[in-house]
Image 1 (cartoon, rainbow, N blue to C red):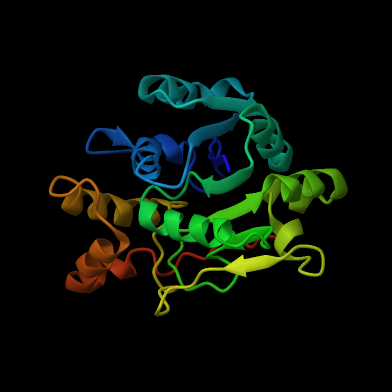
Image 2: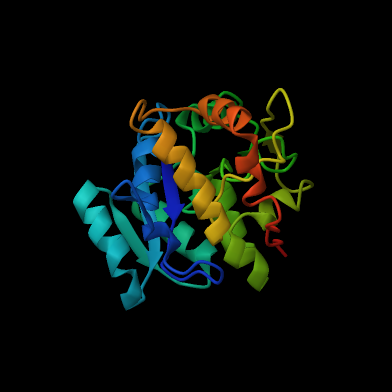
Length: 243
């Protein structure tokens, strides 16, 4: 089974424009994410999927720099962008990642992928439906057949923008699996969508990366336990709803 991870990334962002190229310790957030995803043991190929807009050039340049394939497709119809990228790179299954997750843990990626791969019955597996992992550690894995069906059947603009809702909102049509953490960590917000999010992620990287470039979610949680006030930096930020 050829498993292809696709990171959707673009320079446009309502609350924090250009967030994927914001730098910490001289390196962009997207580069940190690429570096961390590459440590996954279960992924055969990693793709960055961006849009056709000229403003995406910094993303294109970064992909060339770090030697990651970059696919350019529709801006609003992200489902079509994923579908075309997956077809182009001959995926049997797709790992969907979003570029607001620079701290993503490759061990958790492997855990979700292995749950999908070790059971031939699942069409879709994630750690997001029953949320126990922090925001910023979202991982979705789905079969190419499920992606094709989704692309063929749904015309809902919200479904097409967010790629996967058609799958997990139709459990009568797709077999859904989920991975949960042993304890609830959903109160932690480790994604980047605002300046406050960026401040927290910057603190985490600055304190952990120089000592251990492969730091894990557990390392982050331990750091936050030692610095509880950091959690207040973005505790007021509300997550955008997926329609």
